[in-house]
Image (cartoon, rainbow, N blue to C red; front, side, top):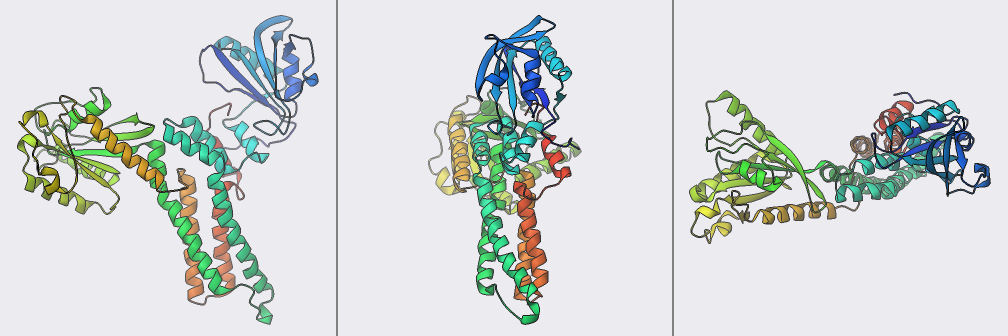
Length: 466
């Protein structure tokens, strides 16, 4: 998406509140002429001009068109650079009638403003160095956050913690690259400004930090979009009943007929500030039914994608040895040793007493429940929340943005090339090229290195008015 040139002479406006009717709405104006444009349609209750008011002043008055009152509003005045965009700005709080919102917007457009593009207010804030690109993207994440954990993650990034870490890493590489390139200027004199041993240690340290950030993306993505929890087991052990009990709604069809669930069923729920994405799967068994077998294949795919696997067995008909054998078989499909397996012994209501030594023999976290009666479901949710908290507490800085993740991967690859080059005594100028590549990719995260295409892609995903 191509954005208009940003200039102080260009003033934009947009409705910043959600579309539709409500008690109140907010209309935002930003640009060098915003105070003058607002003054053409606004009349202060005290009869004063907007130029007479200081910054961050809320002013009560009316929106006027041809001496007719359109609405009584509260106008807030901002003077540059003390505004969200870093420009002169105005925010108009009006009544939430759709007609009133559109009428005020039309008056502002007639007065000289133009309609803002999606995310253009935040784009201007970035251009005016109110914050960097990673912080700007965190604004969109903050607006889209659906849980306390996702909100906390976005707030931390918006406040610059992640950016500072990236800038520090980039500066270390810049400092050493300057010494490498200085050597190239004196190549005929065989002068060495950069200590190779020190540099190789720096490379190792930076690679470790980059690797940690790359690894954190799995956690960040789970916090942002939901920790994937796959419910697996043989047919008719109560997987769908368990899903319905956790979600507290009849999401999945429950039947005594084996093979009812032939495709994965997904839904999300927020538990104690964390989003969990539950996936009910087809029962695992040998079948001659083509459709059911397709569902079973998808089950194995969901197992690979899951962070937590709930293996449900029917306590009333469960063979301990076969259950343990089946779990070991599933583990062979999983290369990621960080996956959590929780054994769910269902239909405990059908037993006179729960098997005393079951948990010790299986050597897995085990929870006995009755999905039908919704007994001990809270023990499952408590265990899942514990997993989410452990994942979040393992990392100081968590990457949740796919663009940042890709840039970090490219940075790591460039640093590996540099390291291999030094170990094999490649010419210094080739190492400098790879170093500049690593610096470039790190800079693309915070916006030191950017282009119009990248900016258009990022900010076009914002809502209009932000």
